[in-house]
Length: 478
Image 1 (cartoon, rainbow, N blue to C red):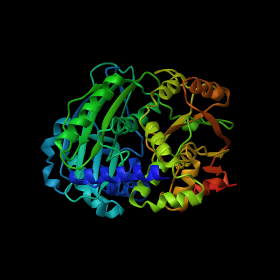
Image 2 (cartoon, helix red, strand yellow; image 1 turned 135 degrees about the vertical axis):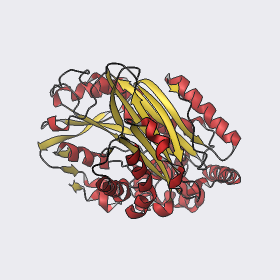
Image 3 (cartoon, rainbow, N blue to C red; image 1 turned 60 degrees about the vertical axis):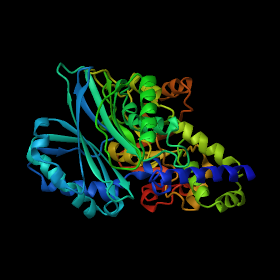
Image 4 (tube, helix red, strand yellow; image 1 turned 180 degrees about the vertical axis):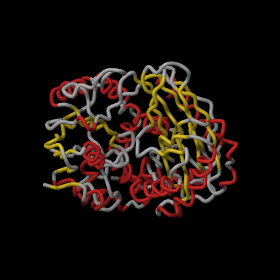
């Protein structure tokens, strides 16, 4: 017990070091918790913008985890523009006219006063969308919005992407995921901070089977030159290890800490979005247990109030287990899921090939910010009735504690999370075996019991891990 309290003191000292750099990491959300709420804020705002701009040449995609573009193997070209969100006049039509016809990846950092209400969020972002509609024909294929507690740190970033010249040979998937910090109690220069953040962005490509010819356009900032240089060094190391091209692009000069990137990857397979082909009996495969953010959030709570350690002991969790669980979670987040993506690709039709419902994967989804909620999204997209057998968690005791003490409303959430794969009954066991041979503790966690829906049946233990009624109401507990 004395050992864990000494470790907590060291973590508090590190927080004080952050503060001297001009940032309080305890005010920054951990991992994917930094996202603006999609259902309550982002989607209603975008629906309003779509309606107002109907008839223009601007098209905004429905919710997608990544933008998927037909390309040659050599992929895409990318150009970046960054503007001050509080100053729409900083963007001019002439700035973007030259990118007419491009797909656009958008990253928005918005102050918290505008982040929790759809009308406020709309008021902040709509002037930029209107200007883009004036400038030409654009397809906004992916957006990502994060919250900052700091005045003056707002910005909007546009990455304009277009396929290189040549005949399409497959698909290039493009995504942006940017966060503030993975573990705010660890040094920002810890390699795992950058590795976790870039893995998190690449995850949305890997889950679709896009794993080759990686390119990384960084979104990196820090409160001091020394920290920024360390982040950039770690990013270069990551790119080298992954065999990825590191693109030279501008990063925002706003935001105390920013870790992320717009990333792209190529696949010669057809991405798994065959929702209308799902058959009764299809199996849900989980590549590994979920909920990696729970021990990090409990550790963070203990840094702020040491009495949490005593409370854990009363709850039946040894306080000395806290650091080990937090470090295991951090290491999990920093571990790439690229090999799982390669296995997914093996069970997809090649570009130009017909889909075979008894062989090919129907759909996949990344279990990250929404946690177990993604199973409902699968059921909704595929119009199916799914029955979950179990909810495998990496740290069930910490997830239960985090929910019971309202440290997290959804302790199944994660960063750089596991994958759910919806596969035919005929090949599901083979996919699980391949994943296990590659080191993933994969298992079948459910099945499609009927086509038509959506509906998800889940074990009643789910209520011990999710306190958000909006999420729980999507599941029929048994």
